[in-house]
Length: 77
Image (cartoon, rainbow, N blue to C red):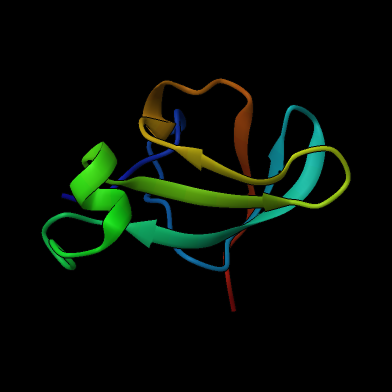
């Protein structure tokens, strides 16, 4: 069960993003199909961890496909 941005691109760890207009990065993806014992998966059903150090720190987003403030800027290398 991969996660996607509103644009339709798949969310991947290391992606460069903006969150509420601030630069950040996808720190991790908690995918129930890949890691069913991850605590994010057991507590929230999966999602993505966003690192945006200026205002938010770490933010867990359960449904990135419906979060208009999460935008892909560049793919991870």
